[in-house]
Length: 283
Ligand code: NDP
Image (tube, rainbow, N blue to C red; front, side, top):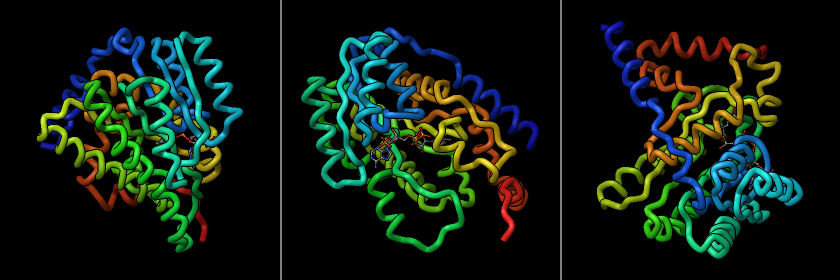
């Protein structure tokens, strides 16, 4: 039965990964990308630029945004704007959205990718840090969806939420981060149902990413987890964009995480001991 189920899951995943992406659909589209000054968000901006989209990018560091915007223009984007903003601030998410609507004259893709900084270690009981991170990683997403949805309805547009495998398979050292990403998954999973039941033609793509080779991620796991390969940010960014453009409900990168998630509860004791033993930790 297990073998049959595995083969069936693998075949289903392979079928889903059939590439139906047509880059031409992104030409001239109006895109807002958050967390685009570095890492996966920067690569997302570059791919949209290559496909000819008009882009607004945001993050906190103005100098980095300026460089990313210049490169987007060189890569083929017809128009690019940037706006520095802090998503842990209560006002900034709506300020960014208003700026994007004003510059772009509407919105086709809302790409929510930013995360606030956090630690990679045992939780020290700091609830205030979780509260601040909830605003940056989750509540700001909800705020931007709330303000952006009427405009996405007009354009039959798309929301792309970048999340993590950590929200599907919790692991140690990431309690505040995992809590915020679980909130993201729950929010967008429920919203997918509600939009579908209301026959609203706005797609939501939830992106479940494994370890990606950004500076932030690699600097955290270095010396603690050596057994997991990190996948390229540019590849992750392209899959995120393809998932949004083909209006998929969820994408996994790398692909095998979909299979792992399908079988994750078969042997919970074994799963947990594999996760824990992959960490170098000596109390
Ligand atoms: P990075 O740390 O490389 O980039 C984070 C981006 O968010 C930067 O542009 C940063 O710019 C911005 N940012 C940070 N704090 C704030 C803030 N308070 N307000 C506004 N913007 C902010 O992250 P990654 O590229 O690694 O991750 C991108 C996404 O991918 C995240 O959603 C993450 O959860 C997800 N992911 C990443 C994985 C990985 O292994 N890398 C694995 C699984 C999921 P600035 O500092 O200038 O503000």
